[in-house]
Length: 230
Image (cartoon, rainbow, N blue to C red; front, side, top):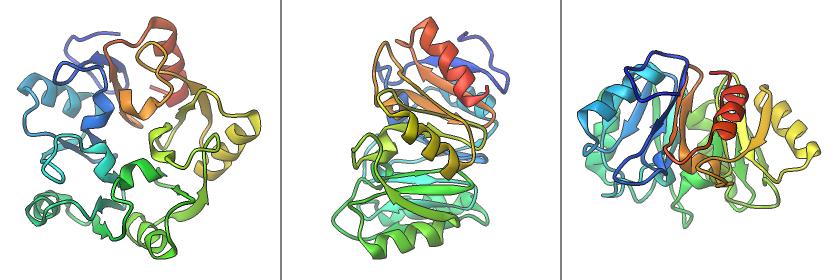
């Protein structure tokens, strides 16, 4: 695992803004990745190279913490209703044919409440029906309502791509099987950044590669690589 010049399909260590919680600052899909404009040029190139994506520099809701404010897949990107109009337009300018939608309601951290790949979405049981319909319309996939390890903030507890997934370390075997069936990929329990169970906070990934927090240990890297198939 290296910080050297990246090639696709690998796992690379990094930190952003002095923290290993790199996953909080990006919203990746197979084709694009939303990132804060303030990232260093080297970090922007790393994301482009490892994930093989076009980067979209933007804030969301005026913040560099992008992950809680959005969730996306190859069909669309769903944004929090706290996102500013100029930020929505910035995403639309590079989104091409992607659906771009804003979910209304009191639950503003939509990225923490929805987990998605190109095959399905798992939406938190606390979301109202109108929000679930918006998830389905924008992401273009079947939406399953549920929890992970009896927790409602499902988007924080896993990283799912089109070829694998790393999930909250304390899920049961039954839940592991259920998530695999929903997303049609194998998933594995694990941690990131030396024991952090909220794995999305420390991982930026798609089916082509992954960038993980700089505190991630060797055994964790091996699990992440196997789980995500990169």
